[in-house]
Length: 266
Image 1 (cartoon, rainbow, N blue to C red):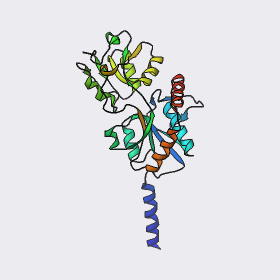
Image 2: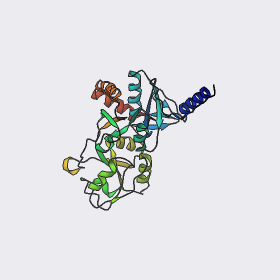
Image 3: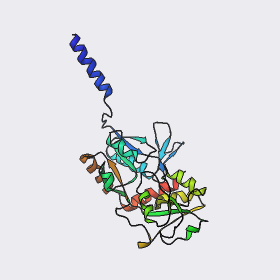
Image 4: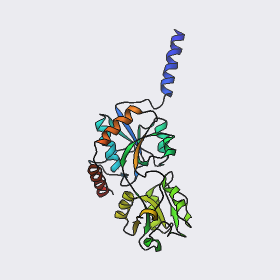
């Protein structure tokens, strides 16, 4: 009897210590909720937003993609917010989340940690500046000599700054709201962003603008800067199911969803 009690007690302890037991009825999606128009946080409830564990709400293009995937997989969507963008890789590795849907680019380095689905949105790289800046008329990434240029922590954007000759490569910043504030307040002269993110920033910050560069005047990209969904290595069945869902989304569908997200952002 005593032995049976010990076995039962040990089983309970082991169950209590077990983490991240998979619940196939839920789809836990990680994002930073600070990267409009892909994802952002808001205090008010809307038909498009999803409530988070802390009582806030997240919306954006990524949220709509997550809702679509959860619906097609017949799972309940749960949003996991991690403000540290690069930490989402660890979250999916340790089973805290099922998917990363956070405007993340599929790179060779990241593929060492997680698997990626097919692309769910195509982007291009631009440079954000103040409209009254001497750099606002730049025609090439080499026209920023002396500029203080920054990027978000944990992104591929930071690596691209090294291609801009003669700039002051600033320390990375946690998210785009912080980058934007620093640019508006003249603490930096420019930062790297994706075009749709830049469009969203300009809508709420009319003193800013962004610059596109043609051909060789722009950045040399070793990898496609489009964005994909990250998931735990070896999740073949889930990856294939998501790729089928994404394949049914036309380019016009994706464009419409992104335009709607831009129009809704706070």
